[in-house]
Structures are given as C-alpha cells and as structure tokens.
Image (tube, rainbow, N blue to C red):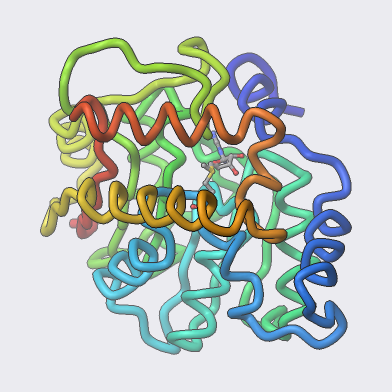
Length: 277
Ligand SMILES: C[S@@+](CC[C@H](N)C(=O)[O-])C[C@H]1O[C@@H](n2cnc3c(N)ncnc32)[C@H](O)[C@@H]1O
C-alpha cells in the first residue's frame, strides 16, 4: 500500500473500471472490442507530450531487438510497452504505482493479442521488485515529475539494468523559472509536482553510473501536437476515445495549462538516453 507522496500520486491517477470505460468508448467509436488491433488503442496509448511520435523516437533510441528485455517504469495504461512489443517483438514488463492502470493495461494488452510479450505489475519506481541486471533496456516516460528523489529513481533504474543497457528518460523538465499553472496532467497542484531541470537529471543519471549519450528537447513536437489537438476539437469536438478519459472532468484546464507553460518556455519534455557503465 503506497504511503505519503506515492499515495497522493496514486490517488491523483486512480480511475475505477478503466477497462470498461475504454471498451465502451471503443464501441462508441465503431470498433469491436472483441477484435482489436494494437493501433486501435492509439488514442489512449500515450499519456505524455508529443504522442506516438515521441514514443517512436524513444523506442528508436533504445535500439530494441526481439531479444531485448525491457522495463517500462511508470507504464500507465501500457501504451509504450505494447508499442515496443509490437514494433520490435521484444518482451516488456511494465510497472506502475496506480493499480487501476495496471489492471487496465493487462486487460487491454490481452485484448490486442500481446499478452505473451507484455506483462504489468503494481510497483514503485523507487523500489523495483527485480534482481540486479534483469533488463537490457528501460524507459521512464513522464514519471519523474511525480518522484521527489531523482537520484534514487535513477539508481533503481541503473540497478536493474545490465552493463551496457540503455535507459531512456522522457520527462517534463523545468527549463525556466516562473509560475506553473495547475492542474496539469500529472498533478492537481504544486504539492505533488516535482519537476527538475535537465542539469539535475544529468547529475542524478551520472551519479547512478549512467552515461548520457543523447539529449533531445521535444518542445516543438509537443506544441505542435497540442495545437493540432485543439484545432481538431474546435472543428469536430472531443473524440470519443482519447486521453480526456484518463484526465477527468478538468481535462480541458490541464491541457490549457500544460500548453501555456510549454509555450511560455517554462517547461519542456526532454528525452535523455543513457548507457549503464
Ligand atoms: C503521466 S502518466 C504516464 C504514463 C505512461 N508512462 C505514458 O507515457 O503513457 C505517469 C504515470 O507514472 C506513474 N507513477 C508516478 N509515480 C510513480 C512511482 N513512484 N512509481 C511508479 N509509477 C509511478 C503514475 O501512476 C502514472 O501512471
């Protein structure tokens, strides 16, 4: 049972009967939930800025192969894990603090026929239930904003990676001082938001024995995706199946606030790829 910050974070994301909510939305958008393909879930697969294009860039940087064992830390609904498994044919384990997400990730993955390649369990990113050197690759996508101790976060990821293994961090980072408007997708207010700047991440990665090989600012991609989304909503309204199902009734305020902070240059989604020494 999570306590303290983790309990608050898990409460922020919790949504009962998530599989049923998504299955109903799939049906309402004309799909047969008994006969789904992995791409049918794309509208809810990426609970992060930049959508599928950002996931694809991260997957490419991880250089996944069928033999790669991957850990997706803070997997949410399992979208990235399913993408890695479907694209590379590799085995992926996803962990997440929020049990509602883990249950839905497991059920949705079974529905699209990827259960042999991707599995999910409830766990904390700062206390991973795996032996040292269990994985060749790991991803951390929009999770660090909910974790106060980045050094411990990076040390845990490094511990479960083999030597030469890769960690891809794709988090929303602080790039300039200024007031962030809340709520955002990851926090109702500043009490559960722990954004850090890129220098802090680099230092935490280096301290964990992870050598940063690549860094990419995905701000322009994220702004473009937000703009297209708003244009689509203005023209045709909200799609039946989409991330608003995960963000709740204040989804419009969350999207507006994140887009404003991005456009004002206060935050940016940054991809860092590091190799375990
Ligand atoms: C914004 S969502 C991103 C989900 C997913 N990575 C994606 O990109 O679609 C953040 C996720 O991180 C999880 N999370 C936050 N803090 C965590 C922690 N300490 N340990 C494990 N998961 C955590 C949340 O439960 C949530 O599912």
